[in-house]
Image (cartoon, rainbow, N blue to C red; front, side):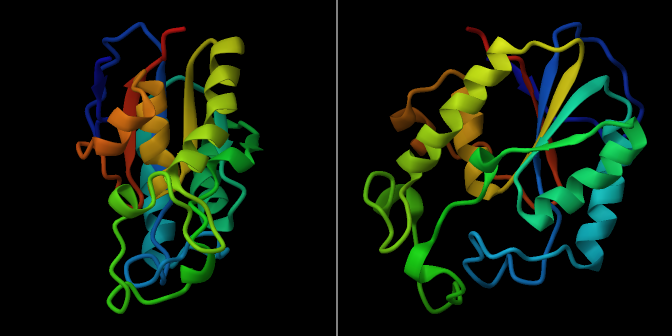
Length: 198
């Protein structure tokens, strides 16, 4: 499935096919140094600026739906875009971040973790595995296919929920999606992908 990044300026709408914009929330004070997971952090100053920049960039696209993780850092990222486009944000728990269980809040420097190799199928103690994330996102993909809209859709999520959703929307099986390293979303970024085929 072909995909392309949302441009940062000089927009030219040359594709008639609707797009899905995978957006990772803006920066928080905890993302880079700790396993944040389900902790409900708010955007820091940089993250708020990223949300405004995303709204300015994505306003050039005919976005008709905004679906977001219910965590504050995702909702706050979606809000400037929703205000600009006069859309209502649809919270969806399927987009919530990976549950790190007993590892949540631990410093990344103190505990090296490779989720793809260690917890693709084996759950983190007290948490989930990446296959759990994959499975909870499947109904969202089905909903997108069942409810076509006249325009694009913006999905605001997190690092691992977006990576798994990228695989689902690209038509990959779980094992293939687990090995894909071409999409590693930074905070406050958007990636556009063509509408999934049935």
